[in-house]
Amino acid sequence: MQNYARLGMFGILALIALRVGIGWHFYMEGVAKVRGHDFSSVGFLNAAQGPLAPEFQKLIWDHDGELRLNQTQITELFSSAADRSAVHFGLTDEQKKALGRIKSQTLDKLGEVYAESKDAIDKYNLSRQRMADMESSKMWNQVSSLRGQKEQIAKERMSDVHQALASIDAVWTQYEGRLNSVANATQLQSAGRFHFGRPGEGLLSTSMVDKIIPIFDMSIGILLIIGLLTPLAAWAAAIFLVSVILSQMPGFPGTQPTYFQAVECLALITVATTDAGRYAGLDFFPWAWWQNKKAARLRGAKASA
Image (cartoon, rainbow, N blue to C red; front, side):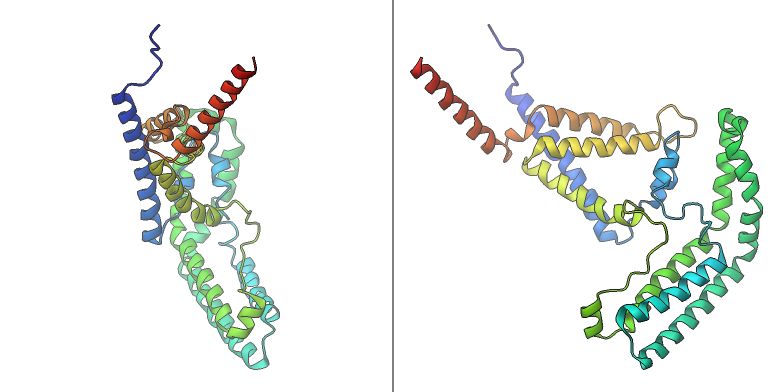
């Protein structure tokens, strides 16, 4: 009886092309992120829509800007960071003087940022209670037209302070570099780099995600292209795309289409479940070894029967 489940030559070639094509896409996405030096998942996570949007946005440190727009708290954080870096490196009196100048210059720069953005920050703070009332109101969250209006208000509220937040982030990054520049080579080697961490930032945050995703994309791409650990790589990529699709929950008002991601996800599931790495891929060798071992075991069982 003919086995209709077997793949023909054209089917095998199509499977190889599908595996290599998806692998090339993932690899080039990873390369583009590395070469660009500006990849950030913040925009993607901020744009999440649907019931899971808050979970995606939790990955963004200070998502609503409440901490960074509080000048008093940020000033205290920057001041304490300088003191902690002095202890971290065991700075000399001369180095502490240089550190004091850096702290003073940075706090002045921060003051300029807050002064230039005062109107936007005041407007942001005045709308805080209104946003809290909307979040707690069933009407604003259950009526689709009102929910869309609430999301637009929230988006405009954040856009008003976007420049201020970006400036504060830039000063923060620059300040960390300048704090480390005070230490000499021996101190840096002995104590290690001083990290000016963000309070409350979890392990799985955008800063970590931004480091992982380019490596993930390139690794998945290479594995699929050479056909190594194909089921594992394909399932990992498919799960990643499912998370992208869920960030724009299908059927939820205001979401962006994710048809392309859904089609590629289905293609990856096909690659994972058809053992596509056996065809013109390195998965052939462990598969062949296992088949030979099974055949030898079967011959041994028949001989002893």
